[in-house]
Image 1 (spheres, one colour):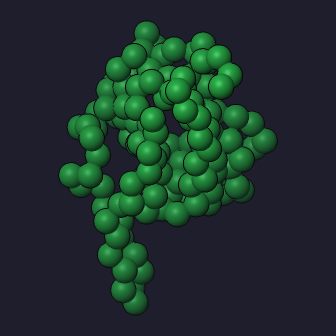
Image 2 (cartoon, helix red, strand yellow):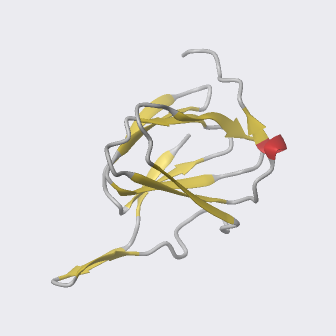
Length: 123
């Protein structure tokens, strides 16, 4: 099931710096970010191999996750929150605030055959 981790963050009077180093359960092979989302939903899939880490580095959004046993909605609203999405986590991202940016790092390079678009039955 998807789970949150807090990124190491260092703050002083100059601002804050959050670090992604030795905290992810995978090596990073791909990085992308989602922005300018109006009133729509992103995602709608899970993966055969890819594990992802999602960080809303600006603004906020919600991520629904369902692993066929449990389902949960995560509200990402701080740049030091990192949501780990396992391969079995069918997920959607929605309720993006204006100006939000969702950064996603992935364990695998893009492969269209890695995507599973069929959702689990409702719990």
